[in-house]
Length: 210
Image 1 (cartoon, helix red, strand yellow):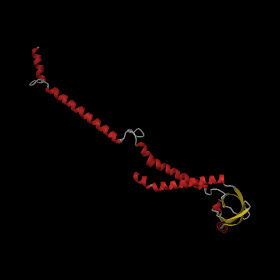
Image 2 (cartoon, rainbow, N blue to C red):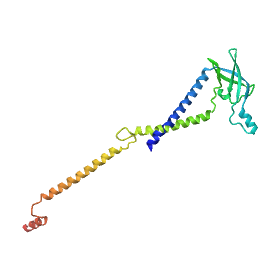
Image 3 (cartoon, rainbow, N blue to C red):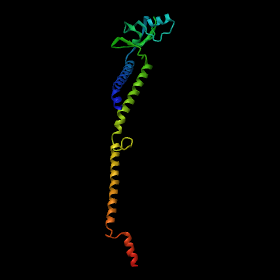
C-alpha cells in the first residue's frame, strides 16, 4: 500500500509543482514590472457590467463584478485607447469618467495594467496548500526512507532487522555450543572413574581399611 501511494500521488505532486512555479512566476513578473514600468492616468470613456445589471434586476448583490469598457490615455503626446475586460488590467470597478492610475510598458504603450493581483487571497491559500502537500509527500514517501537507510544502526539509532537477526542467530549458536561443551565434559568425568567400582563401593573399602 505504501508503494501504491508513493507512486500514485506523483501526478498530484507534479501538479503542485506547476502551481508553485506559476505562482512564483506571476509574483516575480509583477514585481519586476512595478519597478521598471512608468505610470500614467487613464480615463474611463464607457463601461458596462451585465452581471451588475442582472444583480440589480434580481435585487441581489453582485459577488463577482466583471466590467467591460474603454479607457483613453496620453503618452508622449500620443493618445491611446484600450478596450476589454477590466479584470485584464486589474480593475473591477469602471464607471464612465473615472480616472485610474495604471502602469504601461515603455516598449509597447498599449500594454497597460494596474498590476493589482486580483484573487491574491485565494491564490495564496492554493499556493500554501500546494507547498504543504509537496513538502509532506517528499518527506514521508522519499526523504524519510532515504535518511533511515545509511549506517549500521539506522537513522534513529535502531538496529536494522537483518543485523538483529544475525546477532540473535549468533547468540543462539554460542549458547548451543556451550551446552554441548558442558555435556562433553560431564561425560569425560564419568568415564574417568575406576572401572567396576561404584561410588558406594569406594566408600565401603575406605571405611573397612580404617
